[in-house]
Length: 230
Image (cartoon, rainbow, N blue to C red):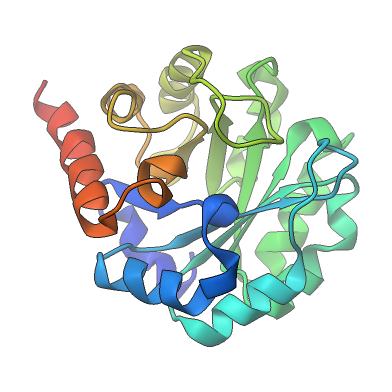
């Protein structure tokens, strides 16, 4: 784990705003508003138009954000052939790199490649992919990202299969492996995600679609934390 993201392991919920829905015409303003709201990291969805049908951004945005903030940058690669781009994203300033199990034949060499650079290594699975597909490589995972929607577009509805996978991963992964959930995470779903075992929550419209980022993040954090007593 990199020093910037070392506080992610303290057991408290970490809300990660997904920049897919931010105002790219005012990127610095968005970063400053999120910093003021107390976020502990940023989540960047990189899509190539091949592995998923959408096309977003690449290394220049990661590099630009690194110049703007010291917050940990969590890069989610929804791309084909991720191994070709690992070093470039790390050189651009990524603190975490997550790629999809569905995009590769063997994830182990890529996880080892990421870890060799001193960056957090994560693997992601889509709703239809069983946990058993990543079980052999869990020992190399600093993070597992469970998708509650099909990777590719924001604004999709939450799929409860993610909860089953999180519960299963709690029993399979080590205590040091962070569990992250992405897709349809909002005030109605975050508590169930936390109860199932997630500690990292990727949030898009439930932050960027709200007039007050601080109030939205505070509500989400409180709901996730309250699940421990439910």
